[in-house]
Image (tube, rainbow, N blue to C red):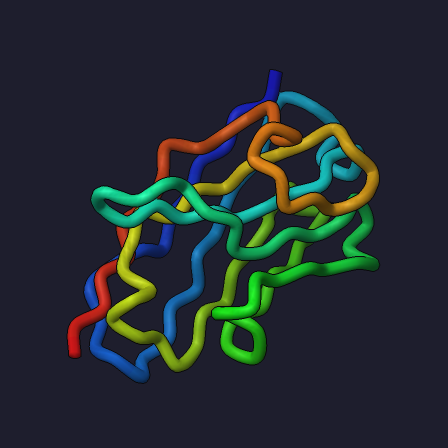
Length: 124
């Protein structure tokens, strides 16, 4: 079992930055690939970013490339999502997820464990 706890969400203005954090416990963190997803009201949960076991490979959806950065600290069992130049359309609940796959993945169904989510609201 893996437990994931997100933090760092909040209410910001367009153009601001936020850093989301996800603390993992319950399984050697370095054996998990990690991802961030988000879900806006009335929409499906969608992929945002992912990072492989040792952080050598990252992947981003097109609408966050160049603005968001995913990173991990295996010594601290943490994964982060640095979000810059935020836009109102980034408003959503952001979820941290963990997968036993070695490589990063965009597929929700590859992720076995999910956090409870943290709300990000961006005003114009």
